[in-house]
Image (tube, rainbow, N blue to C red; front, side, top):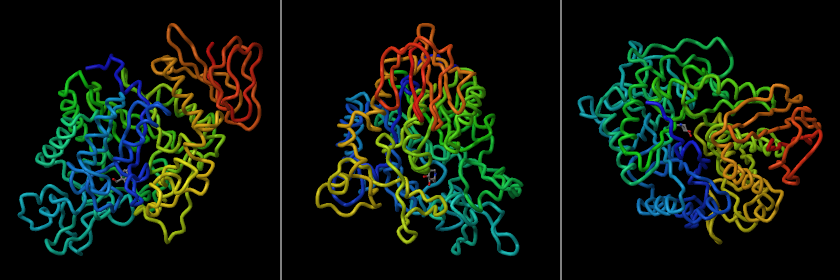
Length: 535
Ligand code: NOJ
C-alpha cells in the first residue's frame, strides 16, 4: 500500500513542547497543559506551526521527567487534568493545529501497577509483562547488557530472586513485548488516545521494544565512537546487537499501522518513531517493506553534524538516496535530549540552520525555544537534575523565555522559582522583544514558516543539490513542474559568490531579513547568510 496522497503530516511543521518547560499557569515553577493552552495563539498566529508534539504529561514519579510513565491513560496533576488535555486538544483542532503525543512503549515506571504486580511474586499473572531472568551461577546479571544511562541494564530483585531488565533507569523496567497481553494492553492505550482525538504518536525509542530472545551478550565495540550522534560513555563500549532492534519489531509496527489506519481517512493519524539508528538501510526498514510500518522514523542524522556545508550536503544526499520509494523524509535539529542549536554552532549559524531545516524536502520538527534562539544553560553539578548525567540534558530544557519581565514570563508574577534556572540572556532573548524586532530570530522563523506556506514547492517539490556550490556553501533546488527555488546557505564566515548560472532571480528571503526582491547579475552571499531565491 503506497502513500500517494500528500497528507497533513507531510506538509506540517511540527513544534515539540516539553510541557514542564513551556508555560507555568499555576505558579509552582513547572509548566503545564493549561500553560500550553494559553500559548496557542502564539503558536498559531505568531509562529504559524501546524502540529504540536507534546512530550509526556502522564502521571509519573518523574525520575526521567515523565518518560517513566505510571499510568498511560492520565495526566500528572503537575501538568493538569484529563479535562485540561481535552480542552487543549479541542482548541488546537479549532485552530487547525494537530496534536501528536508521546507514547512510551519500551518501559513503564517501576511505580506502574503492572510492574508492582509483576514484581510481587514469580507466579503473578503479570510476572511475564516485564523481562525477568535468573542470575548467572555466580550471582551476576544474566548477561552483559548495559543501561543507556550508565551501569548494567539489570537490577536485582531480592524479593523474587531474579533480575529485571531496564534499558534506561532502574526505575524504568522494560516491558516484555513478546507477551501478547502487553501488546494488547499498549494497543488499548493507543485506542484510548485516538478515541479522544489525537492525531498521532511520537514513539519513544521505538526500536528498543524487542530484544534477542536468547539474550546473548553484546560484543565489544571495536570503534571508540558512539553508535549514535553523541557519546554515551560506557554504553558505547559495546555493539548493541542483541539488546534492541530485533527484526521481530517490524511485525509490531505493521500491526500498529493497521490500528492507526483503522481510524479512517477523515482524520489520518501519524506514527513517528524515535529511532537512533545510523545505518541507513536498517533505519529505513522502519518505514516497512510496503510502507506499512511507521509513517516516519525520526531522522537524527543532522544532530551530530559538525558545522560544515559538505557534511550536511552529504547527510541529506544519503538520506535522499536511502528513502524507500514513496516514503517521506523528515529533519530534526533539536530535541529535549540535545544541546541547543545556538550553543552547538553559534547564533549566526543557528539562523542558517533554521533556513535549512525549514526548506529541505521533508517534515521539519522545531524544538520549543529554538525559534527565539534559546541557548543552553550551564548548571553547577550540584544543581543538575537529569538522571542521564553524562548527557547534561538540563542544559537544553530551561524554561521558555516569553518576556523580559519577572521569570521571563514563564510563571505568573510571584510564582515559585522555575524547576530549572532561566537563561540569563532572557532580557534580550524572549518572545515579546523578538516579536517587535524585524531582524530577530523569531522574525526569521515566522518568515520561513510564511514562505513555506506561500510557496508549496517547499513542501512538495523535489530536492536536488547544486553540484557547483561555492566553497563551504550548501545550495539546493526545490522544484516542481511549475516552480524552481534555490536555497543557498553560506556556512562560511567569508562572502561567497553564487555561480553565474544562477542569474536572474528574486530574493524571497535572507536569513538577515534585510533584502528581498529582484537581484540581477552575480549574487554574493554574505558571511553566514542564507537566501531563498525564486529562479
Ligand atoms: C528517549 C527520550 O527522548 C529520552 O528523553 C528518555 O530519557 C529516554 N527515551 C527514555 O525514555
